[in-house]
Length: 70
Image (cartoon, rainbow, N blue to C red):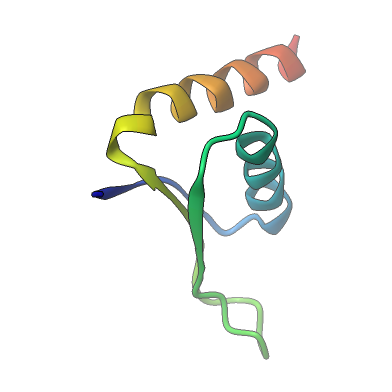
């Protein structure tokens, strides 16, 4: 199973929100946190999904952003 990155951000709250949305929609994902735990100024948060779930995951996250901006 190939994984593709769908999110890369430095915003911890957005990262956690995206994880929650994917979990609620039963899309399996893996997350990667490269943020320095001492400084919190370097690195990023990343979310990966299976290649076959990429389009669905992006659509779900995009639709959530559009509905929350309305």
